[in-house]
Amino acid sequence: MSNLKSLLLAIVLVLTSSISFAQLRPVDQVNKQFNDKVSEMYTKYKTDGFITYKGGNINMEKNTEFPIFVELQEGRWYQFMVIGDPEAKKIEMKLGLEGFGDIITDKFKTENTNEYYTQFSFVCPRSGRYLMTFFQKGPKRDMLGHVAILQRPSQTSNGTAVVYKH
Image (tube, rainbow, N blue to C red; front, top):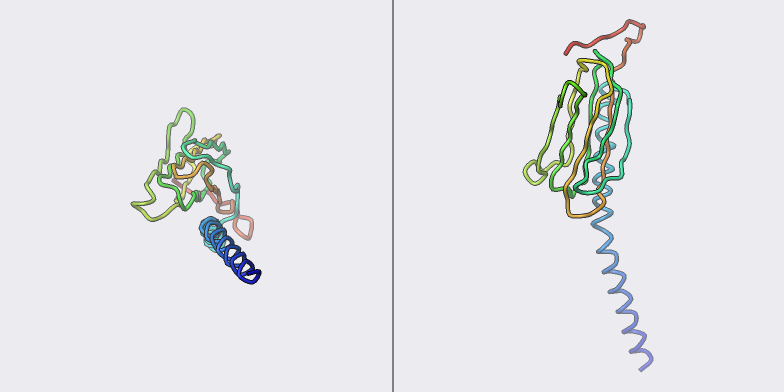
């Protein structure tokens, strides 16, 4: 009888640990998918000669617009990357300048695009403090998010100034 109790206890422990592992695994996969995309995007743009101007993960809540203020200089070439939560249902990003309005708006439903990130190049038309907003709608309260602003160097390797035209 003692062996039967031990066997039943062992079976219950194995089933419990399997269920716990199965519940944690999707979260780990989502985090890995997100982190892999962030790494892939940085690698791509670094290889293309961009340098990081601003960037990092942000703590987001679903259905809440996250504001980011950034100083941009006229004539500089910027590359924006916005990576949302792989489980997001809708992602929206806007970039604007007071008195100038929204310059760029990108919104999409991930189920339609099968992507949870967006990227765009931007040659700044006027120096100033720009407002970028990032919004996600999804099934969970806390959403993964990463924003990066990269730029082309302002000088060539021999020190010649570079200005890009929009």
